[in-house]
Image 1 (cartoon, helix red, strand yellow):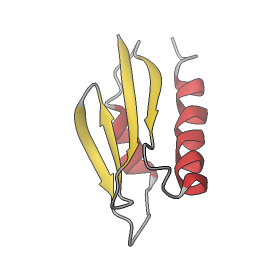
Image 2 (spheres, rainbow, N blue to C red):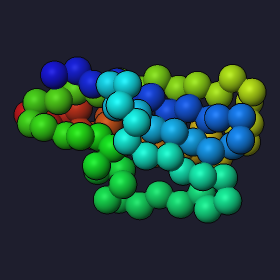
Image 3 (cartoon, rainbow, N blue to C red):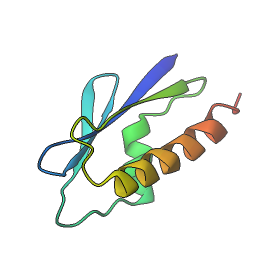
Image 4 (cartoon, rainbow, N blue to C red):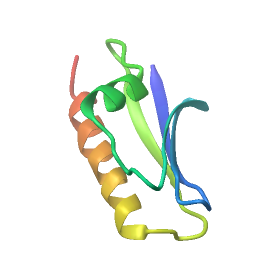
Amino acid sequence: MEKIIEIRMNEDKSIEIKTDNVSMTTINSSERKIDADIIYKSLDYSSGDRYKIKKENPSNEDPDVFESLVKLYQDIIDEVNTLE
């Protein structure tokens, strides 16, 4: 099944991660921490799933932080998408 991972930088500089329009986690601007367990849960993985990323940063807040997180997710889903 194809799933869309949406990564959105909010105006308050928190970052929300959704899978298929379901909010999976929010990284608040004061901590900016994410770990492997949070990433795994946010993917909501089942065998055969394929992922695409949708990214939104309408106010262009903290572009380096935002793009680093997007790249991390992209690298992970590139690998996951090769699984049978």
